[in-house]
Length: 137
Length: 432
View 1 (cartoon, one colour):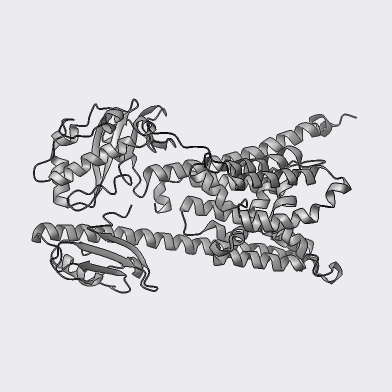
View 2 (cartoon, rainbow over the protein chains, first blue to last red):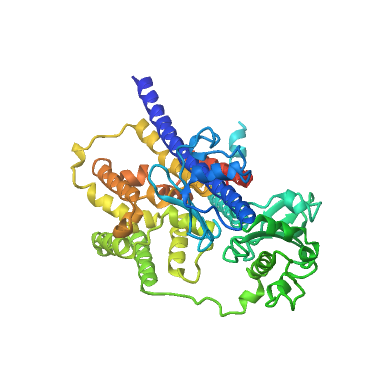
């Protein structure tokens, strides 16, 4: 009986440690995803800048992130190995969804905005554009 | 007969003093490691400067150490741990300085006299070809060398200072130049020319100190004439200290102060209060804050009278033992959150923010309700088995009677060990 009680108490302690540990791991996964999304949006922005140098205008119409990435990859302005952080790091060419990237521009293609949203909730995570949000810092 | 153990046994008074100093050292050590890490993150920001980058200018560099000063720079050390210079990045201070199409992050290296040794463009949101044009223009890149940070900070006209923009990348090079001057101004004497901050003290500070003094009075004066007012004081702490002032001592407050700067000028009353909350039990063994002032503790004292004692279930000793680990485990959560910069509002692991009512998040409200509900069945349930701040205050409290190295002291050492290990990891380990 005493041994059963002791085991129960140890189980309670291990249960608390396991619960808190799982919670911490979940939070750190969120942070890692957050960092990868930041890195992605910066990489795409560099591709958009290279397009701008070549064409003297930004990509001419607003489009989804995957369409923008395809366009830039076809032109060699983005690497084919670009990873999708929402698809456990698989390449965009292999796993385009889910993804939360969107591209916006004006009618003259003189400005750009790259927006990263949470694919599940639609909440805006990051916005990088040529006017009010020129950096992610 | 010669008793060997007795011969080596320390007198009780010396043992007690040693253990008190040990506990203070544990707390100080944890604070130091958390602060060092926060200084590193602040200096390095989102793109930590690496030794490799610095070695391009100072080949003998082996370590970078956050200075924690107002410049927010990194001190460059050689393998003898001698300071040989400073490294800093222009971001995030220069994030509004846009060149052709975006700002740039510039690495600035100085010698130990803050004389510029060189710059490098680490990354840029600007047009890549323009950035390249700037990087290959050696005249522009080397124009900064030999100037002190103070001289750089004082530049108001680039051409007067002999800094000429790069042909074909004028706006990008000018943005890089202004980013450097902007960064040089951070923490420099130019910034100190303006009037310093003013000390602030208002009715809230007076009220907090009044509660502290009254709490001490109730703790140290046990006369019946005074103690009959204790129930009224207890209600006052809930209504006034809790619901009106809402300045409860909590992990979110303490970690915020440790990570950034203690707001001496704007929150002097709170600072004195928090200092006394830790100092009084350390010197006197009286847990004044926990036992007399904390509104959540006082609310639990009222709620535990709701159900008669004989109708309450009893917790087994083993269960109490297991649950007693929850507060130090929550302190580990606090440390991991601070080091890893996790998306966790530390206010949500304690109930104290719930007293702010309108501003309270769902997490803190849940913790408050569950803790209070539990206290109707298990006396002072949250205080004993859920409060990390209370555990910390009890950890430093002087023990009355005999004192010895206990499980709590071991757990404190484990927390210090965790803080030490986390502080030794490179920033990349934290995905920063």
